[in-house]
Amino acid sequence: MRAALPLLLLTLASLAAGAAEPLRVGSKRFTESYILGEILAGAANRAAPAEHRPGLGSTAILFEALKSGAIDVYPEYTGTIAREILKHPGTLTLAALNERLSGLGLAASVPLGFNNSYAIGLSEAFAAKSGMRRISDLAGHPKLRMGFSHEFLGRADGWPGLKAAYALSQTPPRGVDHGLAYEALAAGELDAIDVYSTDAKIARFAIRVLEDDRGFFPKYDAVLLHRLDLPRRHAAAFAAMQALEGSIDAPRMIALNARAEFDKLSFRAVAAEFLSGSGKVAPRRSLSSVLFGADFWRLTGEHLLLVFVSLAASISLGVPLGVAAAMLPRAAQFIFASVGVIQTIPSLAMLAFLIALVGTIGTLPALIALFLYALLPIVRGTHAGLSGIGTGMRQAAMALGLAPRDRLRLVEVPLALPSILAGIKTSAVINVGTATIAAFIGAGGYGERIASGLALNDNVMLLAGAIPAAALALIVQGAFEIAERRFGWMARARGTS
Image (cartoon, rainbow, N blue to C red; front, side):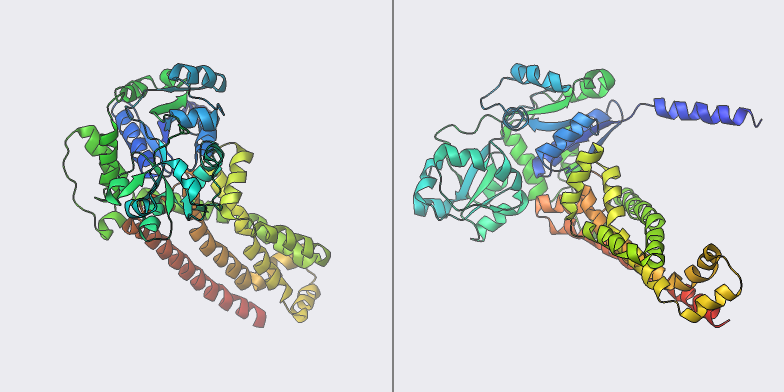
């Protein structure tokens, strides 16, 4: 029986490794991409297992995720593929795109039926007052307050190329999240923003879209950008997605965007309506229905995984580093400088660096980032606890004839435990909040709701992500404070015995 057990485990492991992985659909962090991602995943799920990894970020992140195999497919636009991914200055047909993409192991297919171009928008009242109808008219207004999405600011087919093509001399535009730009324009904080031609807010906010009179922007036909071997690896799911070809025209896409942005349906509900063809109006959401929605336990599990796996790794390294800093004073400065400089790196910059380093998005780079951010409080707490032990206690331990290692293990660390726990508590609470950023690279957790809320400027969705994260932080802090009191009492009892 014992001899058969390893064989059984090996067989089960082989079966698990050989099990078909679900089709992984990615999306960018704006309304339309979220909806299209849900539509693709929903259509594929009718034929085979599929999952949606929403709001992964910019084109560059999605492209790298696709190349590395972290995702299999995501909705993209032909102009973006040509200008931003392939760095081609002209307009390319779908066949020409695929000729160039094949060398990267990728392909573009399944035109969905609409063009979603970049454009420049002004409020109708401001545009009428200033007499602007074309992008070239912007040249006569150098003091315009412009606010563009961060991706548009950096893309060759965005502000840098537009500025050169139209000889614009405006001051550098502000970076504004696309989901918030329309509200900033309506509030008079901005004069001009970048828009997508299928944005539902164009009509709602009475935006005048300026004519691209020099034809700078290419066509941005919506297609699927996927790995070249996808039709072979996920034949049934891919066939189901192919059935979507030509099924969404521009008015339909605008209506779908409006369902999410104005009717406050979830992206999944909008996709379900489209796929069912029912056109039924889903009930309006309350905070409690969103807070305890179908995704609550999945997001909770993902958030707990991010927080406590990274925390366990930080403890396993941070405590020994704190001990080393206390036992080796000459090394203390180097140790504190090393773990301290990590805290100065912005979290999004850290995630971007780790994605490039490990070659994938999702849980792994997020865990590494949280592990690194959690080190400093643990190292400092361990060092402070050990350094605060009185000379008399150390001499008493030596008088008992204990070896240095035994003194550390049996006397000094137990006495320092309250301070060590305080450092771990600080790291745990910080991790709960920082873990919300991990959703921007597809690691899930409560940050997934926060990212969706930002994309939609949806306060209900933002609160549905922020409230459980705050509650979890309070629960973690309370649990550690109970542990600190218990171990503090034990340390005091040990110190007086």
